[in-house]
Amino acid sequence: MCGIVGVVSQSPVNQLIYDALLLLQHRGQDAAGIVTQQERKFFMHKAKGMVRDVFRTRNMRSLPGNCGLGQVRYPTAGNAFSEEEAQPFYVNAPFGIVLVHNGNLTNAHALKSELFNADHRHINTESDSEVLLNVLAHEIEATTRGLPLTPRDVFEAVRRVHRRIRGSYAVIAMIAGHGVLAFRDPFGIRPLCLGRTDATWMIASESVALEGTSHRFERNIAPGEAVFIDLQGKKHMQQCADAPVLSPCIFEFVYLARPDSVMDGISVYQARLNLGETLAKRVISTVPPNEIDVVIPIPESSRPSAAQLAQLLGLPYREGFVKNRYVGRTFIMPGQSVRKKSVRQKLNVIASEFKGRNVLLVDDSIVRGTTSKEIVQMARDAGARKVYMASAAPPVRFPNVYGIDMPTSQELVAHNRTVEQIRDIIGCDALIYQDVEGMKKAIGALNPAIKGFDASCFDGIYVTGDITPEDIARLNAYRVGDDDSTEDNSRLALPNHED
Image 1 (spheres, helix red, strand yellow):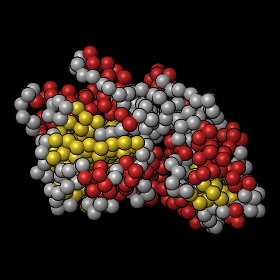
Image 2 (cartoon, helix red, strand yellow; image 1 turned 45 degrees about the horizontal axis):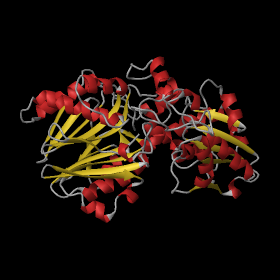
Image 3 (cartoon, one colour; image 1 turned 180 degrees about the vertical axis):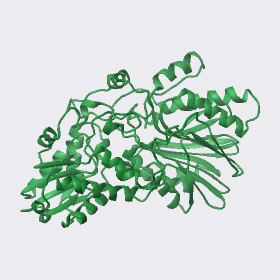
Image 4 (tube, one colour; image 1 turned 90 degrees about the horizontal axis):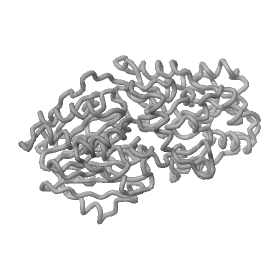
């Protein structure tokens, strides 16, 4: 998961891209980068850290031009600690191309070998985004054959890219002297949308980046579709996939996206309200509402679901945790010990909401269980009589290979465990999970045109149809443990995969 943005305008775009990245900061907190173009020359600055820390006044002044790209990085793998893996990536031929990517290529290892042996291209990092850039550059070069670039050439190159790469990818690329290209994988797993003002086009991961910068949301880029906007602001578009099927990642709606975004026609906020409604029915079948004194969300993604659940059950809704917004998501931190320490730094209890009460804690999802266990203990330490926990998402039982940091089965608390076994590990008095089909219906009802979702981390069905147990084993083989846990290793060295 990363956040990407591209802009073509008639005026300088550096501040506009910066503002859009701030609105996408939740999608990546590890590194940030911006590249702009002026007179066929690229100007780039990227570094580790949050947007506000990476870009100072002097950096912004060194990013001239009316066209540019930006990215905030959340490394699911690759070298998470190297600035070399921050995006955008650049290749000088043909034309000069820079690229930002949100997703995960599942055949990057094979592609890297092809690029070296057949295409005679060198990959300098462990990032699959650099692999993707070189595949695109090779196909543009093969399509143009030294002739001037046309939109038709661009679309043919994207068509060839679709046929070579596998996995999830939302891509924005800038071709020196020509314009900005955006395309989405044939399943639309990762989001990408298009907006404009009278003088500016913007492409971004989420609609909130458009609306927050005063752009009118125009539409989502369709799965398999490519959009090319030239430097004069003329838009060209074409479907480039052989058999596109919209199957967006359902975890975007559960947790990843901002609640004020609308993705593929679905309000993220309304999706979470719907999850709370279906979860309420599950709670009733497990814990009688008269045995619950108060419903408390675990900030922040679970708030809409918890509020809807409390209303339907006729229970008080209270804020029992105060979040320190300056600590990153524990879900994406390396190692169990770091996450456990960070929970206490990130959340503090309002003891009066817990003391002497039976509390129902509502979370958006339970991935590794480390955070949940700590939070249950915090509730008990604050004086709760009983602590029930409900998850607005089903048990996360399977690895995710499309760009979310849960690539190994062993680090998932629900893998090969019953709900009762998970409850015992977390330490709560009752544990209630969302149902997989209930989750799909609750979110899918908001856009009947979507016939299915990628819910592979919940149901083990990989929508690209090319993930085998051997692929999972290969991914796991690259995982590196730490000294603190044999189960909860996250975002450690895994070559060939990124964001």
